[in-house]
Length: 567
Ligand code: ACM
View (cartoon, rainbow, N blue to C red):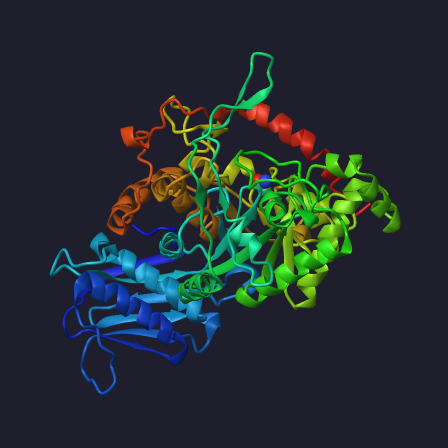
C-alpha cells in the first residue's frame, strides 16, 4: 500500500527480514542517505545495521547511484535525479537512484514496505521487520512539490519546523516555502537591522477568529486574546533548519514580503513607510494592513541588505520577494509618493509596485538566484521574464504568466489552500472560505488545461499554502495539513503519469497510510470530523460558497486576465 502511487511495482514471492546481521552499504554520494536510513531504522528496530566494510556473506541493504540513469523512469523534463528502482529479494535490498535524491525516495518506499512501527522513535516490537520481494520503479511528475508555511501569523518553533520537515520528506515534498515576514510578525534575525526581530517579532495580542459582519455589513474584529505572541529564528537556527532539510532533500525557500504585508518591519523602522511619523504596532489583527513601504531609494536598499543576509543563509535557487495584496491608497494619497512616481517616469501606483518588485528581483538575480513572487507581480506589466510567478488567486496567474514566458508555481487557493475549511460541518474549527476536502486536494493539477504544450513547460510544479491566522498551535497545524498533504503528495508526485487518478484506490491506500501518521505522531484530521478538543466553539470563522469566492477572485484578477503577452 504505497503512497504516492508508484509508476510500477512487480511483486515476487518470498520476503527479506531485517535482523542483527543486516548491513547497510552505500556509494559515496549516497552515504548521507545511508546515515538517514540507519538513524530511522536503529531508532525503531534497535538493530545495529552496521556498514558492510570487511563483511562478506551478509545480507545487505545497498544504496547505489545508477551507472546509467537512463535505465530509470524519466521525471519532469527527462530529469532522473529523483528517480529510483527498489529491488527486494530474499537475499537483500538494492536501491538505485538517478541521484542521491532518488536514493532517498527509494528509501522512503523501503520504509513504507515495513510495518508502520518503523516510523516510531523507539522500539515497540522486536521482530516482523519484513519486506516483501518486489521491484518498484518510480519518478516524480513535477520538480517543485511544495508546502508553504506561514510562521509569521503564528510562530512555529525551530523544533516544530524540523518536525514538519520530517513529515514533508516522508511525503516526498521537496520544497518548504518559508513565509518569514508579515504585517503580524518578522521571524528571521537580520544582523544589520536588529530591530526587525527585537521589535517586529512579537505583538501584544492577537485577533481571535475571523472578522464578522456588523448589522450594516461592515466587517469588524470579534475579539482579541489579550496575550502576547512572538518568536523568531536566529541565523544559526536558520542554518540548522536548512541543513536538516537538505539532508532530507527538502529545499527551504525563503520569502521576505514586499511592498505590502510589511507592518512588522514598519513598527521596527517607521522610516520605511509612507508615514514615517506614525509609530505603528506589530499588527494585532488579521487581514491586509494598509501600511506599505515607501518607494525611496534608501527603502529599496534596506530590503536589498535584508535579501543579502537571506541569500547568504539559504542556498535555495529561489528567493521570494512577496508582492501580494499591496493596497495602493497610501500611495495615492501621499504627495511625496506621487512625486516619486513622476521621478521614476512611471504612470501609476501599479507600475510603482512593479518597479519595487523589479528592483528587488534584479537584486536577487544579481546574486545568481531566481526571484519569485505572488501573481500580483504580473500587474503593471513590466515584470522581467526571468521572474517566477506563484499563482494563488486560482490559476489565472498561471495562465497569464506562462503565456508571457514566466516560469510558474501553481498554488490555486480553490484547490490547495490548507487554511480553508475541510468540511461544511458546523463544528469545523474556525471555518474559513470554501470547503477543500482530501478528495479536492487529490484532484489538484498545477497545469491549467488551456495552456499549449510549450506554455505547459513553464509550470514547474505546485504547492499547498498553510496560512496560520487561525492555526495557533502545532496540533492545529497537524489538523490542517493532514491528511490533505498526503493527497498533495500523490497529486504532485504521481499526478496522471500512471493513468487516470482513482480516488477510491487512493482512499484505500490512505486508510492504510494513517497508521504511519499515527506512528509518526501526526494528529491528522479524522474523516468523521473534528474531535471535541479540535473544535473552537464560539470562535467565528467566515465560510464562503464557491460562487462567492469565484466572484471575488474574478474581480481581483481582472487586471491580469488578458492572458496575452506583456502589454
Ligand atoms: C496570499 O494568499 N495572499 C498569497
